[in-house]
Length: 481
Picture (tube, rainbow, N blue to C red):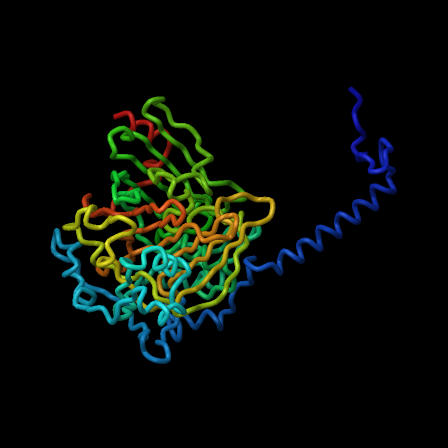
């Protein structure tokens, strides 16, 4: 076989090789194109911005909350000023999920109820997804809107780390790698949409815990079968005193065991969530009890169907959004005052049965709580040459906690397809938020998914897992017991 000279390239004009002079000219042109492309890329929406100045960072804790929300209320007082958040002693054993334990919230009555009859009055403060649900269920869907309670509160070590991150954090690899940040919110004063999404992915949710996640794929007639997962999580990024270097490029460790239905018991998913997903994509493995071995699972990502979801959500829709951001461009549209799910203590209640929550068409509308809050609005557009079932996604992100509270997901025709909401509660004795229910409504199939519920399961518990708990060898041993 003839070997092509190292300096030769295929000719565009039929000659077998190009000359050295042509090669040099082409090289100069290539360098110019790369430089121009880089310059253009840096100007594209969603690309990383410069760090904030020390002067701007000093706004944290003064006119901004420690995590970057505006301290002041709005002009008419319907959004109050942030006064430090909600804190309370730990409830008595067994009362952690009793709504009556959250006196600040449980004593509230709705200010008003939005229905199809008065929808026009509130449309300007509702997501496109919420409006679509009113259109789909005009006689039964409604939203009870309560007084706005700015309950968000985080520990001092998170606040201190956030202040440091504000001047140190930056993104590389076109937004896919985070540098210089650890423990706190990386971008409390965001300049781009992708920074807001990073804040959501790394927000404080505790250090190391075990929780139960029941998923209900609810059919059009209201029927469902619970798919129950036990999930062990180590939020390594949040560990006090850890350094960016000692993370070894892993933000969190995640281990998921299927505990119901019976035919799925024994399936295990293991994930090491990397910080720089260009340098190293998410590490994921699956254990199948029929094969009795653990194997790599690169499909646990992006738009592949999520575990136990009956095809109603993608992998990257757990926790509203997770994983790599590289298939989208991210545009920051600014802040809006919007009516969003917030402080849903009724959905926390462990006296509720799943059948009392999941109803035909939509969840029991008497249980969610909605409030008026300021949210960051981020628009994600699918990049040319990449693939995902969602062509466009609109994210609504809480300014106080950095939790994605709602998402509008559009199909390839640009039609609204799936409507997402995150219902959360401030665990006021732990200074952190926790999910009580997430919903994904499929407007095309007339089905919906409820997830991250534990009403009929044990309460989550903080467990001091070490990294070895999330090794493939450890998972293999646990699965075979």
